[in-house]
Each structure stands twice: as structure tokens, then as C-alpha cells.
Image (cartoon, rainbow, N blue to C red; front, side, top):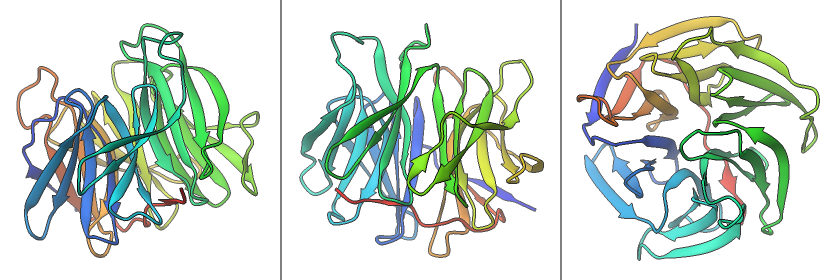
Length: 285
């Protein structure tokens, strides 16, 4: 059985991108619409937030700078200093003049210390998004184009999971060394036509993928073959992303979106009894 609880009734308009800092025992996530980065120390019940210049959509921990985060926002990636709150630009992914309608969306650090970020049309009025990979030396590769709503970043056993919510599909891409073979994907799972679509995901120690189902009010656990192993109903209509946290990485934290919906939509949830996760990757830059 899974125990679902509201941890923080924060009323996020578009909560996203939770990551657990296993070094400091805290959870970070964003509210894209409010331009806020949140931090929660669960044991102390301490909640802190920082406002950043643009709409933050994804976060990552830095290996050599534990008091700083790498952040995807608007048309690029930057660093935020958690002591001063200062913002530092790092790399631009897209030209705001050429793509004024675009912004960053989901992203995550892979086991090799690279920060993957997807972009999208902010109002979902076209497939103008792309997938980027940011290296520690600020080199950027441009890997996929024509994306609608890039979501789901996870890695296990020589496979990268990545999805486009607009297609309602999550795909598995084989990896050879550090290279992702984007030309040879397989469909991990596809949701039937309708309003619900896969949003953000995380991986557990057994290599199973946990995915938030936007407008579906549930979290799904899928095996490496795509089979549905478990469904956990949650008290929000639009769960957005999830991450394992806690001292033993055995609590599944879930962000959600409110955007005109009643509470507890927009809250931060926690689910016990879902197994254990893996530590977040660390960006080497």
C-alpha cells in the first residue's frame, strides 16, 4: 500500500522539476509561472524560496559548488547562488529574437554529469521545441527538433528515457558509451488518446520508471519492457514530476500544478511505500 500525503500546500501555479539533494537532506523544485525556486528541509519543516529573472523549469546539483544550482530558464541555462540569490548566465540554448515564443521545459543531469534540457512553445501552439545536452565546458549539442512538450529524463542500464507529452509517448533510446542513439528508439509506453499525458518521471533502484500523468491524477510505475506494474492515485488532477528523496531515498515527492484548480492542486505531495530511488546526478561544471 502507498501512503499519499500533502507535505506543503504551496499552491504552485506550475510546480515542476523536483530533485533531492542527498548531500544536504533537502528537496528543490520550481514554480515556473511564479519564477520561483523552492527548497524544503522535511525534517526541520523549513521552506525557502528564491525568485529568479526568468521562468525556471528544471534544476540540477553541481558537483563542485554545493551552494549553487544549475537552472534551465527561458532561453538558456544559468547558475543561482543559494546564499546570495544571485543569478549568473551560463549558456544560451536558443535566440530569444528568433524563438521569442519558446522557453525551457523539463531537464535533468545524466549519470555522466551532463545537463539535458528540452525547450517548447510556451503556449503549446506548435512543435518548436528541441533537445539540448550541456557539457561541463559549456559545449552544447542539439540532438532532437520538432518537439511539442519535452518531458521525462531518466537513465538506466544503457538506456535513456525521454518523452514528448504532446504525443502521449515515452521512448527508450539505447546508449553506446556516452552516445545516445536517437535514430533507434523504441516506444516504452503510449497513453491512449484523451486529455491525460505523461509528464515528468524518475527511476528507481530496480530500473523501473515512475511517471506523473498530467490530467490523469495518478503516478504510474513501468517496467523496463514498458509494462504497467503499479498505479498510485493522487489527490491532484495534474501531477507534474516526481523524485525519490529522504535519508533512504524511499519517499516519492510529487509536484503539481494549480492553474485555476482548487486546492490541494499545486501542492507538494509525498508518497511512502514506492520503493527506493537513486541519487541525483551531479553537474561537473
